[in-house]
Amino acid sequence: LERRELLVGEEVVLLRTQEFDMLRVFMEHPGVAFDRARLLNLAWGYDFYGQTRTVDVHVSKLRKKLQASQVKIETMVGVGYKLVT
Image 1 (cartoon, helix red, strand yellow):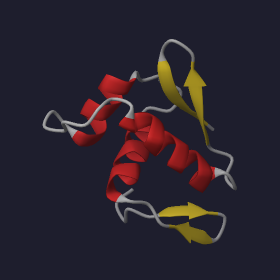
Image 2 (tube, one colour):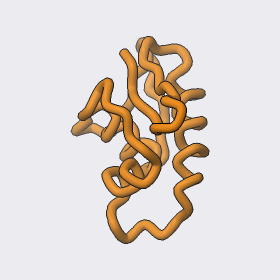
Image 3 (cartoon, rainbow, N blue to C red):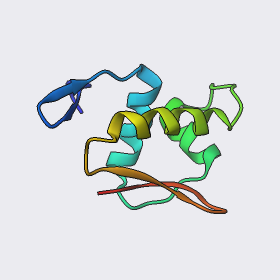
């Protein structure tokens, strides 16, 4: 986390700042489900004015970048998302 790099196997995977910040929240709270609003708040703070659906877009991008790893982001229907290792 300190180096802001994601290693999948031996390959460094490039993440945009918002993707990294969201992944950091998931990694700091593995197995905890977050709704969109809470995830936005924890990842990007109170002054983020985007729509909560932007979370879906970033989760989709993270899932693609994590495909080769054992880490998955699961959808919890009616709740939100959680990291599963």
